Image (cartoon, rainbow, N blue to C red):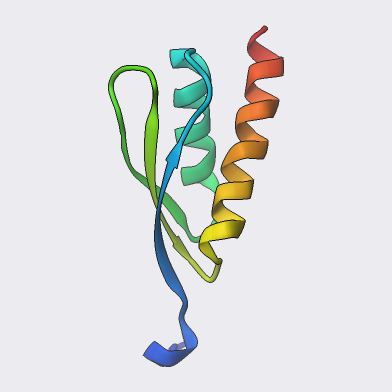
Length: 79
């Protein structure tokens, strides 16, 4: 399968996490990287955590929503 450059949407999104938990931040970074077409490029070392994500075939808004939903789920899991 070959894609023409015009067929492929590519975004880099910077997202500030609300959590202060290292476990939640690392869970989010790993979970995003396990999703097809997404890769966590960077996550800050200390709170407030900031994550930089590269995504294919998604809008920046969709990626931000996905990160927020994962963060909420992880926060409930680690409580």
